Length: 266
Ligand SMILES: NC(=O)c1ccc[n+]([C@@H]2O[C@H](COP(=O)([O-])OP(=O)(O)OC[C@H]3O[C@@H](n4cnc5c(N)ncnc54)[C@H](O)[C@@H]3O)[C@@H](O)[C@H]2O)c1
Image 1: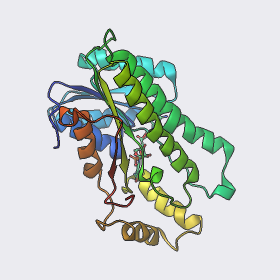
Image 2: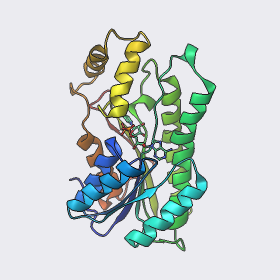
Image 3: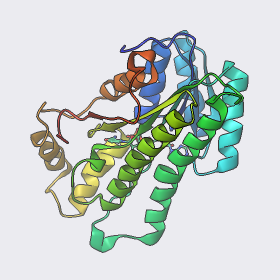
Image 4: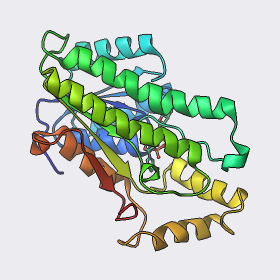
């Protein structure tokens, strides 16, 4: 645990599985009540139930982050069920690998929709709810999940990297607006390194199909070789950083991007 979140109420997008599920559990372990928002209803409910069994308050709301109205409903549900809204983790994301010569307009637009529009709408609805006079009105912290892909040039993920660079820049502008307009909301982002979730494992397989590595194992070895700390990331590595940025332990930090990548992007 890397911060105290007692009494805080958090919404984690894409929290049904993978990094988001780990973040939701870590926030709960740090004392927060958590709401998971995801398009995977059954899995999202199961994950929330699992967290509730550890003694925390945890709920689920159906949320497609590309849908403005769904955001309004998810934030309203979070406030109604948890009694407030102090932390948003904009974690939902998709990765569609392609060499630049093979980029597909529809798939690029889909990635832009989830990773960029989804994050931007999350910021919009969090600001509206958390700022003075908002439905929650007590300020808060937003943590956006970018990627080491925004800090290095790794082949096969040009489109994805562009969306994660956009998340990085959105973070800075949103932090500036929130500060200048006295919303009482801090905004930061994390750049995770490769973690073997469904997305991470698929990327290693895609690298092989794109002819960049001889096998998924070779792709993983290539990443480890570029990582000073000499291993892949674990879900808890990323989740602990999110807890830190969500909590008052980071109270004078806003507009920052924190690499949690074993040094890969240095
Ligand atoms: N795994 C990695 O190596 C890695 C590295 C850097 C950054 N990231 C980022 O971390 C985040 C989580 O990745 P992960 O590895 O857990 O991926 P994952 O595919 O295992 O999980 C992603 C979650 O997001 C949800 N989601 C997808 N589209 C959605 C939408 N439109 N609305 C709401 N939810 C949606 C999925 O249902 C799923 O629960 C993503 O933003 C990803 O880009 C992952």
